[in-house]
Image (cartoon, rainbow, N blue to C red; front, side, top):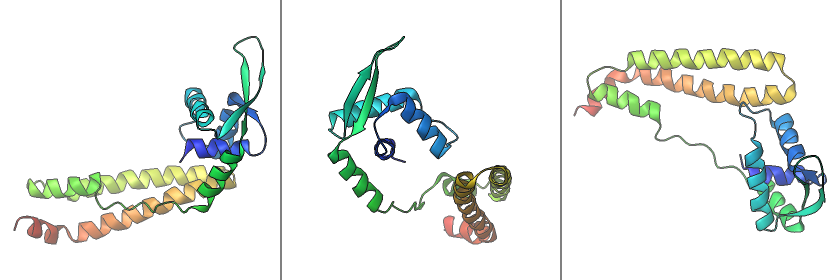
Length: 174
């Protein structure tokens, strides 16, 4: 996810302090790893330097001054272009799991145990996501569904690969 574009999108509703942006980001996107304040402020500084946001007031307080940021017209244009552009599909033509399968077969170790262990790991992750989904709101349900569908596709690949291990091993040792 583009943190810069996401912060710009959140600023479209009106000027905000970095602290407020971080809180809103964490609330709206509920990631397993919340956004760090340092990342918010370094991103805001980059957006400011690039003319996508501007300072919209400074408030003195008990600690450091609090800058309020507002999106510029260039920032709005940037968000509009980003929202219109499709994301590149995640195509995994070379991944670590496939590499492990090939290396296991090339070394004569066999790959069935690896595939079984990976299947177990995927099923555990799916159970955790399903529990989170049943307890969560619509936003949680949608993000969990996205992850679950990817894990289901991985499970199909694991089954297909397990069924073809002997053929793959023969092909690799030619």
